[in-house]
Image 1 (tube, rainbow, N blue to C red):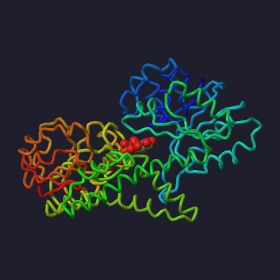
Image 2 (cartoon, helix red, strand yellow):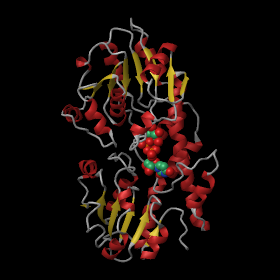
Image 3 (cartoon, helix red, strand yellow):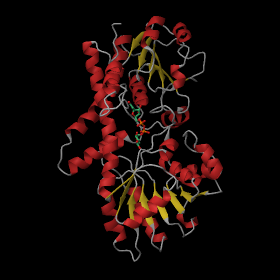
Length: 434
Ligand code: UDX
């Protein structure tokens, strides 16, 4: 098939490369000049494991990079929309990029096109877009909602081995064309109406975020009763109705999805006069996790001003350079405003961090540096990069200054080993009395 993908971000680029790799002819349209020129030169503007190899294999072969629909052949059968739908300050979703793309597509295409919405949009958006843009057309566009369930850091695997493909369409033709598009993907296809498909995406992310805030609340209680949250998570995770995943406590969820989508769903509920109490609590609990982390550090150092603290992890999770709504960066911000002397470390996200936060007076350190932790009174693990877990903690202990605190913000280190080395080891819900 001939496909155009509009938006070359974390979702658009993965979709375009995987579809081109599956044998489709794909044009990706990217308006951002810097990102467009990087792609046009054959380079990858984002870090996603394996994507550079896919791009290299397909670029100018089955994948073509454009910066406008004008240079895309007017013969594609599917247009996939993968542009940003950022949060406004009140939590509602900004759909301006989506509307611009739909206007451009309806002006550019003079035949029956299938428009596939892969961007995350509030339930009801598809119906509103069809009413506003399709009704007055003399051509018969088909609209399909096809939300993505890609995790950054494992997006290609999630594309080729999804738990399911969700399709919300206005007609059978839309479903059939999508079955052709995904012909090489072996996964259950769940079909429904457009609004239900949009709600499925929000409900999935809200539920996953709920699991995380739930285990973070249990961790708080474990600390008070001297139970061990890792044991509890393991104990409940064997129940097939609960499952072992997304039960890792710590400084909370970040990224471009969970924070935005939980706020978006809460705002949608309010707009429909429904108080989604559980979701509001999930958001509140998550916001507080960073405060709990800073409180732990402040107490263990008896104040923050002038203290040397090394924060390991700027990306919102391992395997990505994405720093959007990263809890680690929120912690850095609080330490800086408390006048601590902060060093930051991240294997991949350092450049994207520096580009945005150059105004902060920080020290930067490479994770392989033999200086890492030197003269620091505390180290915070904010992102559970494997590189941090494998550090030579005995050597770091000898380079640090008293009281040598480790705040394990992702419960990812071996607590007993850290205590044996001599660290003051702090975490979330792990027993401190062992
Ligand atoms: C998420 C959804 O998983 C994916 O299906 C959707 O399409 C996009 O949003 P992503 O945001 O890339 O994917 O990362 P994910 O692995 O879900 O982690 C999100 C955040 O939750 C990270 O900050 C991570 O550190 C945190 N997390 C995850 C926890 O705090 N505890 C956990 O047990 C799991």
